[in-house]
Every structure is written in structure tokens, then in C-alpha cells.
Length: 524
Image (spheres, rainbow, N blue to C red):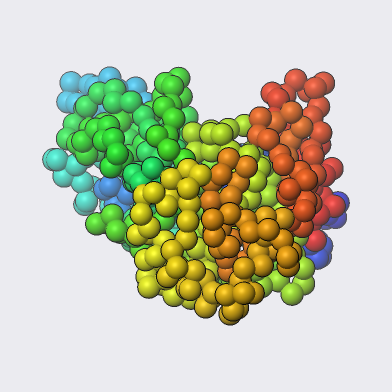
């Protein structure tokens, strides 16, 4: 257990970081992993949380639409969870969401906008018990945000405040003032007194540009936008000509329309309700990639601060959550795969398997999760080494090659992979179903791909799964099948996290104490 010394700041007892040599880099989204942040911080405060910036729902979508810039909802969520001021009014302020009530006054103003004006003018009850220096420091950046939306919004694109997160507004105000997302994160962390050795970083270096992803399905179709991939919503009403997306929970709402099935025009107000049933994907996801405004594939620039932490941290955690819209967008960025593979110190690289299926991973087994992560990190390696020239072979494969159970790699692609790996065709063929032992049987239609139990093919070149994952943790009574014998034959150790029925938790969910007992010995 990490030793913490206690000091006092303005009457508040806060932990002082110890000299604990352990360190962790965490790949996650903003929701599922939040329940375990306190546990991770108890191991060590020398942690770097790496998060995606492709969120296109909720108040984030409004900010991106009017002000521009990356999606910061996941980053804000993690910063609020890390705040040392959870007993103070500052935390309540930055965690607050404006109401989603759509009722309008005589002049068309919603209750959310009326409340927002009370906040920026300093009259709102949320300011009560916040010291004047804190109040003016925070309010200055909220005013910066307000000024920006006044400049950018117009009669045809007014800002919709409903369901808006004050934390998102504050973080955006900081970003606009400093012209740097990293500086904005630093300001947020200092205001909320986050642990000084803990970093929250966007995977991509971007400030003004929006970030979007797409999913290529195994039936040949493509879905654009994180929310449309993860949880497409239902059109409820249209209040104005702006594309205003709001939500009534921390789960973001949909914005982008699928090419396979367009749900609404860009002038519609989409409201996502968790009570609505989410339709299944028409086909399993083959891969995720970044897109430019013309919806063409592009390669994002890795945040240099992320590189710095990846070569220094001693434990890597792939957290539970949305595999294709939270974890993999962080892994496909050129440079990440090579940095995770190059570990002369023998890092522990731990995957915390989901306990239940979701829309993105319906029918998946543990092997699918492992191979999907391996596929994404090999995509990163190839993109770093060869860019568009290499990835053209993957992105232009025939539909029949990407169908479930019928995945093949073109000869051109195989040549690229062999060049990237620096091996001869004979040596490249040694990757086997049980993890690449020489003389093993071929993993499937191509030595460059391995099939899951359901016959879905994934890229395992230039590096096999055990190069990126050393341990798999999975919950007892989880819904996802774990092929323990196959996975451990690949060199990946499988550890079950016991359930605790006395706590009344849902089957397949991790309990903090039980997860801690299994995970802590792996933290280096």
C-alpha cells in the first residue's frame, strides 16, 4: 500500500505524494473506469490517465459545434473524479449539469440558459461558500467561454445549454484562453487540487480541430461518429435549426449519422434516453479509424506527453469500458503500438475484461477482446512505419475479406507486414494459434491474422498478442466467455476476480476490494 503523508492546505487535509516507485499508465474512457479511480490512486499517485477526445455527444457536441475543438467530456469526467475537493463547493460547481427541461419562457429562453446566466453573473446558489479568490478564478474562465459562444453563435446556430456540464464549460474556457488543451487540463487539476503526480492526457495533440472516428463493419458498411457507433439515439423533437445533442445522464448522446442508416438530419435536436432500447449493430466491427471533415481516413498525431509517460511507466492497464469507442481510439494512434511493445524492463500489461456485453461487443469472447486490442496496436505500428501507403491495403480490402469468419490478408498487405517486422516470409509464418510458437499450426486463412473462437480474423503482425498483453483479469460470473486454456497457451496469464455476493452486486461486476486484491500484486 502506498504510504501517504498528510499536510494541511487552508484547513483541508490532503495527501502528500510518497516516494513510491510504482507507476501506472491507464487507457480508458470517462465513465466505466471512474468507479475504480480511488482504488488506483491508493496504489500510487504516479499515474497517467490517457483518454480519447472523439466524444461527439451531450454538451460536448454543442461545444464542438459552436466553438470547435476536441471532445473533452471524458477528460472532464476524470478530472472531476480526481478532485481532492469532493467535500467542497468547488467540486459541486464543476460537477454540476444544467437542467434538460425544454420548457421555454415568453422570449424563447430555456430554464438552462436562465440558470447559466445566473452562474456567470455570480448570483447562483452554487457560489455560496466558495471563497472570493476561487470564485473569481473559476468565473473568469466561464466568462471566457460565454464570450466565445456569443461571438461564434448566430441566429441559425444558437448555443443549447440544456444538460450542459459546467466542468465542460470551464475546461473549454481554459482551453480558449491558453490556446492549449494540456494547459487547460493543468488549470482544472490545480483548481480542484488533483494529486500532483497524477496526469490526465488526451491521446491526440489537438486544440482547435474536432476529432472524429468511424467504424468499418465486417459486412462492408461504415458508421461515422462515436455515439452513433456506441448508442444511437431516437429523434425526440426539433427545437431550432441547430444540431443540439443533449443527454440526461453521464452517457453521451449521438451526433454523427451512420452511412448505413441515417437517423436524423444535421438540423435536428437529438436526445438520448437510457430507457430507449439500443438496436444491435448490423455486423461486428472490423476496425476503428480517425476521419477528417470529408470522412476520409486520417492518422492522428500522438501527444508527445503521452510518449513521455509510455516509456517511463512500469504498469499498463487497459480498463473495462467501451472497447471500440473508448479504449481502441487511444491504441490506433501511430506510435502507441511500438511504445507498448518496446519494454526492455518487462512491463505488466493488464487487460480488465468487461463483465457484460454491449452494442459494440455483442457475442464477443475474451479472445475477441485480446485480438481486437492486438489488431489496433498493430494498426498503430504499421501506420507509424508506412502511413497511408501501408494502411491502404487494410482499408481497401474487398467486403468478402472482412466478412465474419472470412477474413483474409492480401499479398500486398502481407508484404508490408513482413517489411515492418523485419522478417522473412518463412519466419513471419511462425505466428500460431497458441501464440506464435515455432512449428505451431497456422492461425487461420493467413499467417498475419488470427481467428477468434467465432471465426473473426484480427491482425497479429508485426507483433503477437502477448507483446501487448501479459495478464487478463476477468470477473467471476461474467457474461463473457473466457477461453482460459487458449489464452494462457499464448503466454497471457488469466486471473479471475472473485464475486462478493454479500454486497449484492450484479453478476459480472467488479467489486473494488476483490479487484484490488487481484490487481495490486501486478502493479510495478
